[in-house]
Amino acid sequence: MADQLAYLMITPYSLSKSRTGAIISRVISLVQAELVGAYMFSPSDAFVDRFKAGYETCPGDDPFCGALVSYVDENLRKVNPLGITNRTMVLLFRGENVVEHLRRDVVGSARPDVAGDTVRGSFGDFLVYPNGEVKYFEPAVLCALDEAGCRNQLKVFSDFAPTDGGVIEDAVKFSDPANVETSLVILKPDNFYKRSRRAGNIIDIFSKTGLFIVGAKVLSMSVAQGEEFYGPLKDMFREKLVGRVVETVHERLNGAFDFEVPAQVSQKVGAMLADVNAVTEFSKIVEYMTGVDPRAVGDAERNAPGKMQCLALLYRGKNAIEKIRKWLGATDPSKADLGTVRSDFGRDLMRNAAHASDSVANAERERKIIGLWRTEPKSEFKRLLDAYLAQ
Image (cartoon, rainbow, N blue to C red; front, side):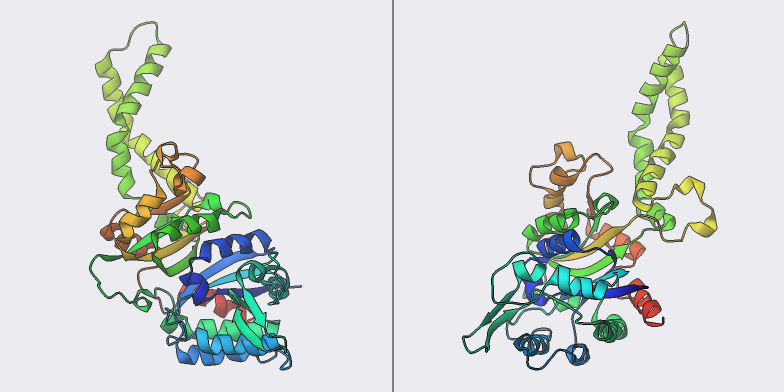
């Protein structure tokens, strides 16, 4: 059977309650499919009208079906009963029979009895009166009911991606816009080497900032992107590591000869090797982020998607840069405060779980490099959908 593409949508209520990380942890722990896309939406009425039509195949005599259609019709709109921002996060998964797998094994059915085995079992609510009438319904996440409905709803995502989604900074309103910033966070490749709850747990830590997620992207950084993104580090390596190079040169040279090498000789040799060392250290970081050694590829391959997977997120709110950096922790995990991302999940200076912008200016520079500065008319998310729907 050919692979299917299926979606999972985290509802506005789940996002507003900062359940995003916990839900993603549960999803990734259960799903037997590849995460291939992530996108934020703030649906228009036209989006909602078309999207809810994807649930028309649901049997009309099932109280869950009526509750589902009503929920979408009321709660995904900009004007909704809860008065909250209608941000949603859509995750795309690719795999065999993934539409049914997501619905049955991951999302689960809405049911009155309490059970925590699936996403809805833990985070959803479905309460009915004795006569069967629905009293309260919060699904936590939305997914397709069948393959036909899924294709229709994927088409909605594709059609509205340029207008209703992408970078949705304007979806969140602030009474006082002073010091409102958007910070870029990248969950690094070590969170995705295998199926793991790590990515969701990291997002859960960042939820302590009280900031709003306004952008999301599954990222396979190219060598060209990696070199531009981490370019400022090359000069830093040259300046800060030259002392270590000199010490190593002096130690090795003295071990190689029966006479003592003068310190000034080691200093000269170390200075000559400082550039080579900086390029080597820089290349290690680019290779870690992309899965490709930048020294081993030609110009034609530098713009190809890398072999590693990351998840990029945009967090918006007052003093977002500072708040994210606080919960990120020090670059060296051994020196990071307990409870921070790098303390809990970092391994060393390079494999330290996540990156976060250190200034508003750098956030802008970095977002432009990875394509999360503005909503793109032909985003990678849309291209992925269009390629699948064309099959």
